[in-house]
Image 1 (cartoon, rainbow over the protein chains, first blue to last red):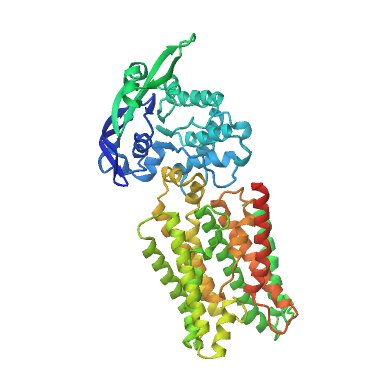
Image 2: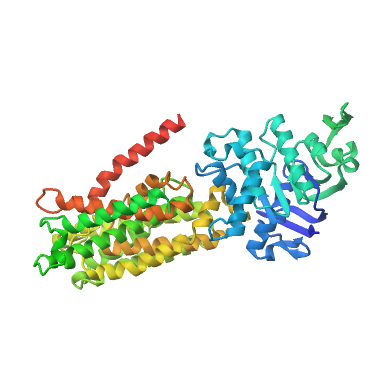
Length: 257
Length: 320
């Protein structure tokens, strides 16, 4: 079983301390949500886990090895990263876009049978097969988000790290993409998401990690950690927590602490 | 190989054959097999010129495609890093100081100019792999070398030197010899090989720099490869043919739909289409009925400006 963790990870950006001695262990096969107010260090933590930022001290580790010390290609194969920006700079078609996820596997070579099969699986998993030949510029926002998710799925990484994958989606697509992310975790991969919406986190995540000013406030199973007390300590707001008839928890902010 | 690539190759063969035959003196292609006295025109004049046109066009096409892919900007041009104007300044220095009497010194000066610009670019940009710093550094160098070139023209010791510099700057393939081919060929081949290796990284940059890095692209390494490849290809073309603009800008646009808009897959078709464009244009300038031959660089600009306008109008329509 692969384990992604951080050990006393400290990071400064532009002279400002962004993460302070963050130690955590993430379990595969689960969806973990990183929560916290703006500027808490969520995206920075995700970038450190993906080896896109090098911490000042401490380390992010994959199976005990520093992720920044892993061979670049191995790291790219094992850790998939979905950035927040949905930039696509050229008007490629969806299949070509998704095939980019195979680059760590094929390098300079042409796409092989395994690569093509993985691309088709990713298209299938995101319900994009019918749109595979369509230029990206003709996609709606939701379709584009699914195509970009398919891109990272095509690499079939052990860890899928996504920075606010649901932020720009309407509720239907949020549920849709959320369900696909849960399916990825159910298939054995570790899924780590930066999420802003407490309700989505409550619904999607098996575990949550609450950050405030670069420090971990609380971490653990969603139902145990996401309480009015920890939310107040993290965000400085009072909330009411309720349960729908279907058993889904919902969280409504009602005022500042 | 796609069908479009095959058509490009076929057109290239026809254009090359046409380029061998066309000129002030029409030489039928069968003339060089026999003991025809005209065969010397083909072997010593037309053949090196045609081959140089192919090399120069391919080099500019690939360099343009790589630059556009790297900067993720369809308006990027291989001249943007200042390598082209740096090489031109080198050549201008050779003319200014009268070293160009030896035919081989001018290209050497041009290559030295390209290398010096590249070194300065690396020095200014430092360890930063930021595209912004890099592009601005290129613009500074382009403007600096451009003004030094203008200075050389204004201070030229004799009007003859000034006119020689101005004429040279316009770029042409007139009277090129096998020496030019042997100078350009290895440098361009090496540069194209370096740029071709960047194809997967250019593809990955479609997703932006962060996602590209997560896919294993190392920005600093990519930057080095692009600068080296562009310096080799563009430096060698300026050294042997002078400044020929717009090829690197136009060609990637024309072939991009053939490559289904993938920046990495645009490189090779750009080489073929660039070679085709320059060969055809160089054939046509020979056929224009004028007292002295129309300069290739001018012909390209005449062709390029309306093309640029067309791109602009299309962009405007899309943004509307």
